[in-house]
Length: 130
Image (cartoon, rainbow, N blue to C red; front, side, top):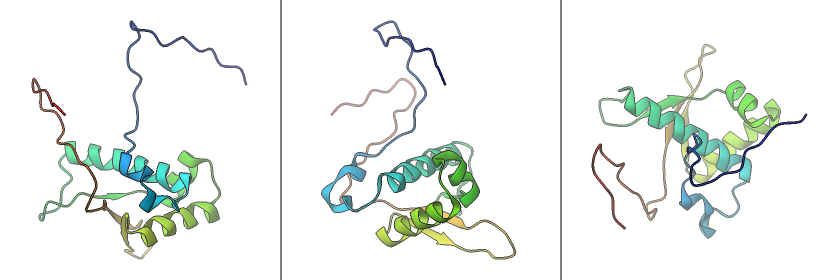
């Protein structure tokens, strides 16, 4: 498959992107597979959209749905592989899945390490320093 590419210059517009937290590259998460890190980033992106759209629980927690089938499609991996990736994220403590039964997708809560360096999203017209 041939695809045309353009050179990235100072005049180029920024491409849309998925946020990839730096804490995923820390030594404490070195055993986490790259697929698990990418899936976490995809779910973080989904959570940020849920936050913007007001899908927030009464306690302030953002919970989301991300099915095995959706992960298979995004990661181009088998069902067995994606199931292992979800399990890997659960064991690491980065996600918490609550099964709902009756064929409904699991409700997912994202977590992050207590020592992670976090930033506050920039408000309109505000600049962040540091």
